[in-house]
Length: 493
Image (cartoon, rainbow, N blue to C red; front, side, top):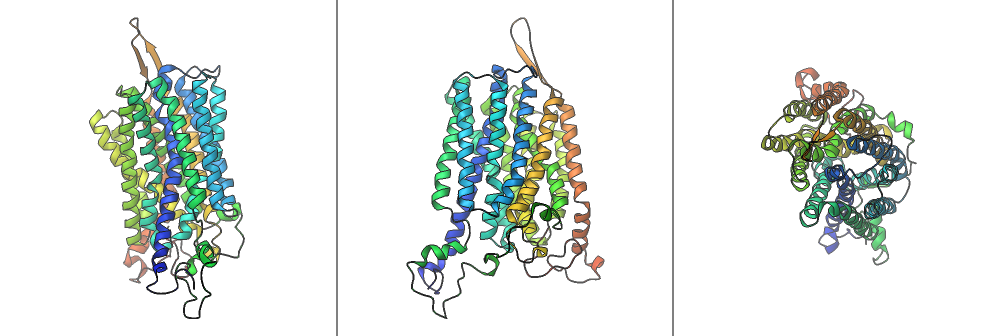
């Protein structure tokens, strides 16, 4: 019989055990990618104080960091488009492992470059571009694995909780830097940070290659050799219900994925949202060290508050959208609220800044995670695909890739607008001045633009929630863009 055949069999509980294992492995897998990203953003303050990088292109350290962030996000975005399509065509276990091993190698080389006293800006920018390319293996592949294990009705809360992996990784990365800066000299701590983060990625890559089962259909095969043949009464397996049956259709093309209803507006909206989110991600610790003269350890603690809020917002958003059966109203209302919150962030006191960062994480980070997990999974299983499930990674790659291109351009804009300059008086007391006011104004504009991208979807979803606008007919699950929906698993977008 199959592993889940008989009621009362010890194997009957295996499906949820395997689901929990898949959740945990993919959660920590992608969290490690964010540990890698946080490593650089968290040590910018120390690099700036040491004026570590040298280039004839610009003498401004903030401009160099902005260019590095732009190159990283540009390469990451380009890689996402390719990785998304590859993720629907290759073994995801190997693909995720390859990305983690390569990312770990890039971090270790960065740290060794510090020990070798390499100050060339071009060395680090090329290395960070490669880092962006190999990190693109992580997100679409992990989302595709999760989408195969959890069906539509589970996605809101579960994917909302799972999407906290990025914020958890940020928290872990910030804590790692804070701990090393506490026990080691700052000029040594940032170098060790990259070595430690690279080692963590290699460790978890080993866990992925050994224990990840990328598709539920592989579980029965795993135990088939040790089981007796199925009987007519036990042949169906609850582990692999119809929603998880492998598709015999080939993966869809990149351009066809763009034509799936909802993909384009959410992709452009996500570009605006991620521009803001990653500007805070890359620049927040540096902003805090400049404005409040915080030590690296304290600045990283404050930046963690944003990620704590993002985790809370993603879980809450997933639950709410599961209940109301549509997702865009929550996203749009959160973005409008986050615009107001961001307006009060600049110029606030140190204590108020901490509270606003927590709130901003809930209002901005929550919708961001919801779009790239539950919503992307919904779109990747759209009824127009006629049951072809080989589009999950492609759609996720498109949405995250478009968002990353937007974030890439914004990092250069932030670096140029901030234009931080360090001045020292006759007593060698140095201060750094930046144009943060303009930066925050631009970020608010991006949040408003993200809301406008979803205007049509928002209007259609609100009509579903208002019985009078539908002649008092009951809301039909899955009616989103005005076209008919089929089946119980029509998406909510």
